Amino acid sequence: MKFLRLLPFVVALPLAAQQRVALTPPMGWNSWNHFAGRVTDADVRAAADAIVSSGMKDAGYIYVNIDDTWEGKRDASGVLHTNEKFPDMKALGDYIHSKGLKFGIYSSPGPQTCARFEGSYQHEEQDAKTWAEWGVDYIKYDLCSYRTIMREAAAKDPANGEKIQSDLMRQAYQKISDAIRKTGRPMVLSLCQYGWDEVWTWAPSLGGNLWRSTGDISDSYLSMSQIGFSQAGLSKYAGPGHWNDPDMLEVGNGRMTAEEYRTHMSLWSLLAAPLLAGNDLSKMSDETKSILLNKEVIAIDQDSLGKQGDRVWGKGALEVWAKPLSNGKVAVGLFNRSLEAAPVSVRFADAGAKSSAKVRDVWAGKDLGTKQGSYTANVAAHGVVLLILE
Ligand code: GLA
Image (cartoon, rainbow, N blue to C red; front, side):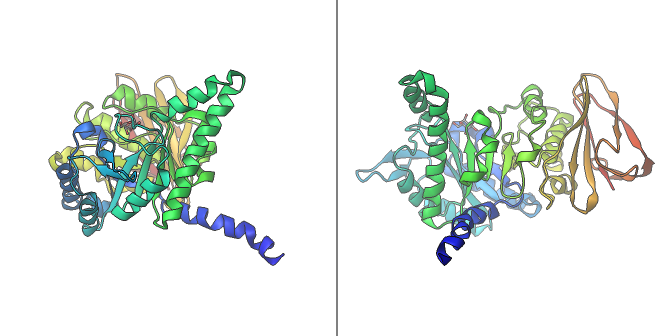
């Protein structure tokens, strides 16, 4: 009897522990956006070195994550080994840890990853054990070829096809979540299935700490802005331990202007998005550093209240987004998606702030004094003015 009354706590405990590994949105670096399939052990070590020497580690960027294409073949007992680009994954993990950083890796619930390397299908427990032995702290689990398994199952019973696919997908993520828990090593669990099936409604309950809410980002204003501004309405699904993930940062990869990269960084911070830099950290311009390392912008993303921001006003190409912060402050982004500079106003009431507020321009690093009711700024083309209202 007594045990039965305690049961809910016994069941709830591991999930709460899982949420604790990501009380604020994860920050770090991931190899994919810059290196894609070319990434090697040496690139990852160089990234770990640069994260420390650039000051990124001190600013909160802790995870060093290898994306797809590290995988080799399975041996006779099914244990997955690395390919020649990664001669010794345990040694690489030790190197990352020796710098006070954390180590992330990538796999798929399918037989093959998206880049057609070996996936974890039917080897989930075995692979989770291998990752734990390597010292992995973060796993990105990318649907990829598992879609074929879902589709084939659905084709056998078309009337229930959608439900079959949805169930299979959830089971696959539950399976890896359980396998990770069984290793006893805490790992951040990142779901990557491109936002299908309203993943934000079910990922947290199976131990997901973050879930991609869209398709893949690329290094262009069009891609970044379509993804970022499409996040309106998702704020209620995020909170400490579980975050919407509009994909990794492109800041510093070279195909957007500094203004556009500031828009990217501002919007991701207002969204309480994971901040995973995706550039070559060993070759960063001062401009890139000034964007990735702005402490006040990072503080908006990492605010302990853990509330995601949302759109509070929009008209044509002009949008205002607001994120409630601890201590009653509010972060506000005035965005201009058009090709010409334009004035954008925030009414404090729309942003959930009091009618009289001290206004700070975050990128300019300037206090603008106390304003009544609203504030208007001229916003550059594709640009942002990021404010804190107090
Ligand atoms: C998918 C993911 C990307 C990346 C690649 C790797 O496209 O969405 O983020 O991991 O696979 O193959």
